[in-house]
Length: 281
Image (cartoon, rainbow, N blue to C red; front, side, top):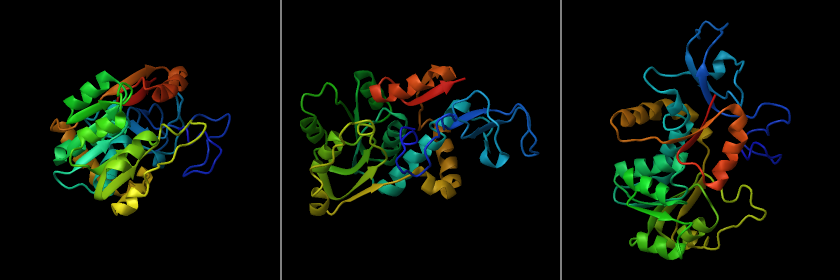
């Protein structure tokens, strides 16, 4: 969303001043002129920061029976699919490897932690609060590091990864990316999902240890979930199945009322949320 508010070129055009803020959402059809949708149907789409949306039917998806609306915005929505493709397709994991996940208590990072643990990896998670670290251990992290209380983050990451880092799933950028690059193994994979530490920074910080990519013959790759839209039908049933089996858990931070949406967005940068931040209308 920060990117959508910026005038600089991006993968989607900026949100125009005066228009509703672009946002995914889930809701209920209250009136329909499309025969494919009936009043009462639960749907998802880019509904925006608004209480009522007028949409074309082709831009909406029906919610599968038995799936709670809140999960369509997180674990069983774009967030979960981002974790799925970022981990399986970009990280290219192997059983027994070590993965470091930054922003691990966030919406995407927490799903990556669970996918990686279920797959058979050693999982080291980095988050910004003790309660977040405790939750991360409960859902699969072998080690959870609180970067805000760490006296030496580089030392803590090195101690938590005695066999080095085979994969790094980055949601933060900045210092933690540089630390990860200092610890990567031969043929490691660095997946850039986001860089929240840099989105509002006055001066962006690039990695100093980038030459390790050459020495270790490693790959650092960014990705967008939209690139995988044709493969959503492949991943979605798997995610639903793992959720029903209890192998994937979800956590949401709820904020009530559209008027609270700007505050909720700022909260992401203050580290006040855990899991998926969701606005209840």
